[in-house]
Length: 464
Image (cartoon, rainbow, N blue to C red):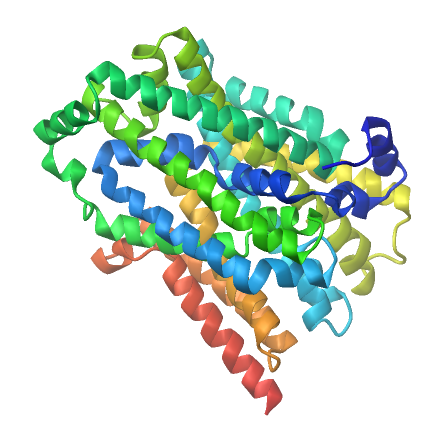
């Protein structure tokens, strides 16, 4: 990827060149694009949350990747290249263009939902960062979270998409290198693959069963698969690529990199269970491996891999949230709705974008202090985010791309119905009002069903 340097990127920010800031001038090539897609996909949920669940239920949870890769396949065939061909640089912009009779309503609803949903996802990354810094340095969780915020803001506010992609490439190399080295060293330390599987069988034979925890695995596979198909922070990378063909070729490469990560993550979860069978929380598995089993070099690389996963996710989320607030809401939706008298100039838009980036980083600090409402464990919080994302956006985006009869009313209704259904389902579970069926069914299922029924029925009614 070749593009403007630091001085040019700063000029694009302060001169108000929003499209350049959020798309890196659409110069991202094949390899950088694939690595950036991987970096945004592999979050703290993967490094801390997924290893923790493998620690608890065994290798069977690895089947969740089939759902994720099905989502990538769907995006490659039906979403990513089509959105890149449409132009623009936000999902809300596409929905407004497809369904808008004027920019206001569809754009405002989509942008508001996207910004709100990503507050949940950022919270998961902060909880993971707090766990890491507390375990390694003995500092309070809130202080650790503040360090994560300061670090990611230091380059995201200034550099935009170009700096974010560059950092993604470095972070993926650290991620794959750290995971690979830690996995190899851990398996050798225990005596090889056979010794690892024998030790796991002695603890619990179900740890090696592909059918362990089927309800959990299926629910999260559905949530992650549908969510990744239309995830705005992944699609922000799509908008930055050179052309639709680059998108189609980059996604399979990203999946191959993720396959390596998936094997390492499952192995490390099993290794942690064998070495540390009595952890108080599964989310502590990674830090226990790094501090209690590996030496300073391998352990340090593993911890760097976790930090890389957190940073590569948070910077992407901040850019998406900033674009939703500044470009979609402030610059277009609010003037179209008559809330603002006129569209802001470029400098005003740049200032709002910066402020939105900072705000998107700071607000989840409060959410992180009450993470139990969102699922408590890192991977549970990530799952709630993907359920909200899929329930809100999957049907309107895919339906808008491939069903000519879809209408504005259907899109608005589908987004609202999906978001509210997922939220209500989660409240029932958290407040203990759910029965066995409600607890077993992931919120993405009622969210998608309600969104689909509302989207189709309102579109048909308007068409008739």
